[in-house]
Image (tube, rainbow over all chains, first blue to last red; front, side, top):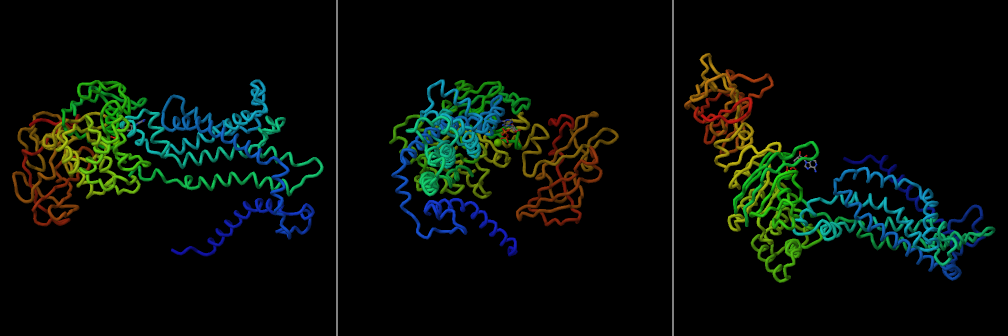
Length: 276
Length: 360
Ligand SMILES: Nc1ncnc2c1ncn2[C@@H]1O[C@H](COP(=O)(O)OP(=O)(O)O)[C@@H](O)[C@H]1O
Ligand SMILES: [Mg+2]
């Protein structure tokens, strides 16, 4: 049966519109970074600066410790992801496989933790970190981000483990593995796509945080993360939007790179072939 | 190789009783088939044997050793799953050698035993592939190979052939049979397919709702079913049933033919007649029916008909449909009356209330 042309056209148009809406802010970020300050307020706006100022990236890198901020963001994200994965692999596996009393309510409890806004936890966490002397240390946001990430990753991994046939670890146990051995020797290697997607998600959650970093790290300039650092570039009276945009692009690049690197794992399909 | 003893094993999930006092003694080297409809508890029993599920009560012994509380890996058994459960991230050789590696066997010994098992199953050319790159039949062989490499005390197989197409299934059935002839490893094989049970088993254990209905070799199971359920389940097609009519003097008759040796009394009885015990043409007890459906298979004909009118019915909804399996008979046509006969001595009797078989 041939598809009728009209709905098809509508489909394409809406797809193009969606893409345009998603891509436009990124495009505008690039335009802003490459424009001279006086070009930004001109009407009508120009859709590509007449003399793109590519030197802005080098200048921003020279004037601001963006490298340090990126390193801090990376350390925080890696730490938070490592803690979150260790916790949520075990928790997600338990939720997926073990039918224990109260297990279901426990799972739902974790799910509701996901719905708490981050700002709700800022005050109690601040109290805890001040009492433990972690304010200003990268560990504060590593732990804070982990509390943010764990509920998400636990449920993502539970969902992924649910798709893996139980017979796989049963076979491993008959072959002589302990339950934990079966998890590490069979289930986790088979789950690489799910683990990669989950870790990336956690990484992005940590990378995009501003509220926690602002609260715990403001007075520790050497530990500023990228997001916190960029906001300090916005002055009280003058803001150099070109510089801020250029810095934002530089900060977005690592996440993009990780995504491209992990893409082949994300596509998945490794479990195909274990059954049927 | 070892004998297996299952003593009064029960299993409940909350209020649902999946297994009720299951007891079975399996001799060393025996091929036992657990058969029954889906959901009757076959897989649960196998998992309890493997140690993958804990029994609610009861004892399991493998070769005189009480293994009830042992981990699966300590029971020295191998299992073949319906979906094969091959490790997708490992090659065929690694899949087959995994159990030996877990037990710390030296690398050369693993390689030697994997090669030998692969050769005996005809998969030696696949050793470097991953499961994803295998056909269904090849995966099946690799799953068998993974079991035999270990040289375990017993094989447990849970519907290992149900994911194969019909032709391959028959082929692998024979191959598993030959494997058992050669290795003589005690095997417990689960299936819902009575044909597999009849063709492969030394003894069949037939189950329903978590209870054993009968334990017998295939011939006995076919000739002397213990109750209505077994009689209907075993055989292809299963046995025909009809409530037994009695005349004024209390003599029993089926389709108008008197049945000798039927116990006197008021007790309601059900007569059972195997489709293959109905013959074309005149015989000891002859009746005429009008076929409603005829399936010709070339070598034989399945003739469906409604039981003759004089047969009483238990209720209005009771099916009167019967089937005869005629071999070497002249062609039968739908709607054309046909004479059929049976030997009254081959009629089985069952108690209508309990379903239990009655000796004649
Ligand atoms: N984990 C479980 N929780 C509750 N009921 C279960 C569980 N596992 C199996 N059952 C029930 O036990 C019964 C027997 O299951 P199973 O042994 O798989 O049957 P079979 O293999 O004979 O088809 C089924 O009714 C099934 O619903
Ligand atoms: Mg089953």
